[in-house]
Length: 106
Ligand code: HEC
Image (cartoon, rainbow, N blue to C red; front, side, top):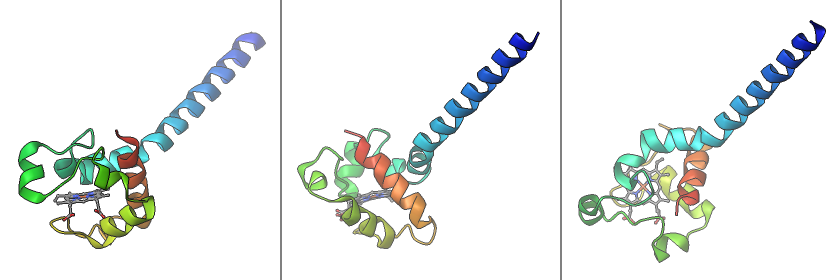
C-alpha cells in the first residue's frame, strides 16, 4: 500500500515536472504562432507571396543570420518596414521569447 502511494507520488511529480518544462519551452512558440507566424511562416520561412509582397526574409537568410538577438528584439518592438511595432501589444518578455523561438527555427 505505502509502496503504491509512493510510486504514485513519484509519478505525479514526474508528470508535473515534465509539464512545467514543456510549458517553459513552448512559451515563445505560443507567442510566435499567435503573433508572428502569419507573416514569418510556421517554420521561419514566409510563403513566397508574403516574402515578395512584404519583404519578409526567412530565418535561414544570411541577412537574418547576421542579426543579433538584441537587434531582432529592437526591430520587433518598434517595428520595421511593413512589420508593425509589437510593443505594447506584447510584453518585453513575450517579444524576447518569440525572438528566441524564431531564432531556434532553421
Ligand atoms: C504583418 C506581418 C508581420 C508580423 C505579424 C511579424 N513580422 Fe517580423 N517582419 C515582417 C516584415 C515585412 C519584415 C521585414 C522588414 C524590413 O526589413 O523591411 C520583418 C522582419 C522581422 C525581423 C528582422 C528585423 C530586422 O532587423 O531586419 C525579425 C527578427 C522579425 N521580423 C521577427 C518577428 C517576430 C518575432 C514577430 C512576432 C512577435 C514578427 N516578426 C511578426 C512582417 C511581420
